Every structure is written in structure tokens, then in C-alpha cells.
Length: 64
Image (cartoon, rainbow, N blue to C red; front, side):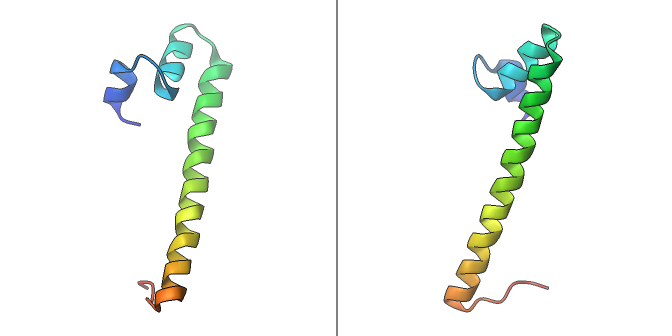
């Protein structure tokens, strides 16, 4: 999420966070931040598993 998304968005997660901040709805702000964190963590894990699968399938060694 970039600063441009937070400033110019009319919908979406960035808009939810900024709008909730402006309305002092801390629960929505924290829920949005936690959702972004969990999504990033899961995406990182999935890409790691995919990278390991590609390495095993094609015999590519990961960098050390």
C-alpha cells in the first residue's frame, strides 16, 4: 500500500483505514492493519512454498 493509494482512494482497504482514522474508529484501523499484516505473511509463506516446489521440481538450488 503506497501513500498515493491512501490519499486518492475512494474504496478499498486503504480508504477504510484512512476513513476510520478520520472518524476515530480505532477498531477498524487496527483490523485493517492486522489484515494487511496477515495477508502479507500468508503471501510470503505461499511464495516460499512455491519457490521450494520450483527448486525441487526443476533442481534449482536456492541462494545461500
